[in-house]
Structure formats: C-alpha cells, structure tokens
Amino acid sequence: MHMNFFSIHLEQQRQAQRKRRMNMILIVLLIVAIGSGIGYLVYATSTFEQRIAAAQKILLTPENVAFEKEISDTDKAISAIDSYRRELQQIETAFASRVKVDKAALDSVMASLPEGTALTSISLSGYNLRLTGTIGGAYLAPSLLANLRATDLFVDIAPISLLTESGALVFNVSCVLKGGALQ
Image (cartoon, rainbow, N blue to C red; front, side, top):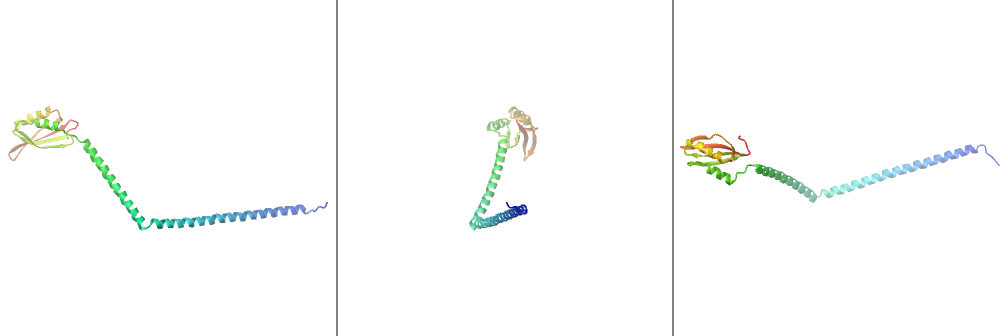
C-alpha cells in the first residue's frame, strides 16, 4: 500500500476547487435568471406600452371622442332632470302640506255673511284666511264676526277693520283655520 502524505492536502484542494466551481455555476445561473427576469420585464413593459398606445389610438378616434361627449352631455342632462325631479318633489310636498279649503267650508263662509255684505276677495296663506268685501254698515260688523265664529271653521278671528273706499264701506278680517296659529 502506497501512501502519499500530501493526499489529505490534495483532497482538501479538490473539495475547495469543487466548491468554487459550484459557487461560480450558482453565480452564473443567478446572473442568467436575473437577466432573464429583467429581459422579460422589459419585453412585457414594451408590449404593454404598445397595447396602451394601440388602445389610446382606438379611444381617441373621432367617433369615440364624439361618443364620449355624447355620454357626458347625457350625464349632464340626467343630472339636470334629477335636480328638476327633486324640485318637483319638494313642490309636491309643499302643496300636499298646504291647507285645503273645500267647497263646504267656502259655502259656510258665504252663508255667514249678513244681508248687505258681499265678499270681493278671499286669500289663503298657510292657515290664515283673509276676507275682504263690502258691508252695508258698521252695525253689521259684530254680526259678521259672530256668524264666522259659529261656522266652527276657525280657531281665531282677528278684529274686523272697516275703511271707506270710493264711497263704499270695506271690511277686512283675518281668520285662522283650525290647525294653525294667528300670524
């Protein structure tokens, strides 16, 4: 048996050389993998940029620009219609909450007028009803107020005011319909 004293040292050198080769191979493989990844990203970026450019070219055709403007105009019109609809709903709600005076109530007011008294105008604001007309004499004012109270339509009746206009005695009286307060 032949034994070399340097064989241990030679074996260590071979193992070190194998490790260096393996490390070099790993480094080369790592560089190739990183290079391939970067190359793929550059290729993919370029491809996506080309696709984006093609899509922009398609989107910016005159037909598509006109279609986009039409959509924008339609959106504005829909917004205006929605705003108009909301305003109509507010008006409808306001009208629904207004006091309604029916024909029977007006007939009661007309029947409460003493002989020689005539209405020239009736106005309604909220619950406030204002009656204006001519009256045959100041002595009929208390009867008019009593008759209006007797209709049971009002929660309050303001004092009557009398004026002389164009030779006629004119009365004004404000009444608050049930459900309101005198303003």
